[in-house]
Image (cartoon, rainbow, N blue to C red; front, side):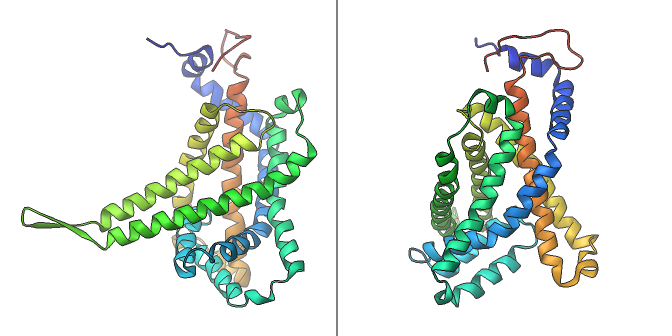
Length: 300
């Protein structure tokens, strides 16, 4: 029978102390300030990044289906505001011939900014790794563009799979003189596809952005924590924007930009909080507040 390692044992014995230590470290690392910086640059980057991706993928899949899939899963990142972003993308694609080399370079530059800021934020949270080793400048420079390429391929795969699931939703099964529609199953599978994709993207960020090699299990734990918190938060955001929010009255024509920025900052906060959970778990060989036992070495 497998026994949990010292870290897991200590965590299970003192979950409250671990959570408190994580929040204290997150505050000490200026987590909210870092999340604000990531959200700001993500706001500058999201439209150029999506424009580049959609222009490239429209050569392989139907543009309407691509925008439909993009709008569905943008709702996970910017709840209640995906229609406005997709509308801007569609308007740009109608005049894509104006996208010259200067505009292309500008879009590539802004698309990489958010990844650069995210890498710097991860360096603050995983400072114990940076002390031991540093990442080469060339690797840091090419990571954003490799990641953009991987996200584009992932969007292509998701579009193809989502199209198949939508077609399945229009069909039905007949058995023993009864007919069952597959629309409910199709909707469930589309939601699960988005949830699995969310966890996969978060895991990949935690694997790639911090300096050094991170355990897949540790990255997956942080991704699940961030994904669960974000699922709760985004449903609350949708409810808030639909019922209590007076953001349209206060900000007028800036409503969409402010709402997107708010959603991105909350998402960035939870992303960094998940990273902080991983960082604190890696250093769980130190004594937690309220405990009397110290582990000098602690395998996962």
